[in-house]
Image (tube, rainbow, N blue to C red; front, side, top):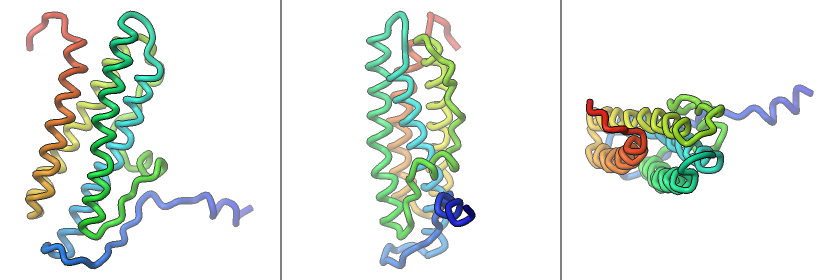
Length: 178
């Protein structure tokens, strides 16, 4: 039985780096890849949370929200592959299995008890707000490490994700002003 248990045990991250000719110090590439792998986990998690809302929303405005949640999922999905490929461009390993993302995502667990449109809107907006903050933090950290192109790449991801956050939050507004 111990042998079977060993087979199912998976590492939550692979920290191997490959040599390449990218003009950054190896320690910078390693640190940047660590930051990006954390965001890769969060992106995978965020995508599945948006799909959960898309699949399970019920009640008033079902169809409109069904489409909004799917659009959010599509935007986040389009971010996953470029994040993973940027990691590998710098010589890292993209830690992108479902188990890896579940173990390393900074996004809070989705409120799976959500049923109605407003419940899903709040749950998804809360998660997406954290995701947007994670992307901003990654951009700042990577910029501090000296990898401006990757920091700029993350800035664009922030713009895309915050637009989706705006769409979700607009459904929650009832004329209140901050």
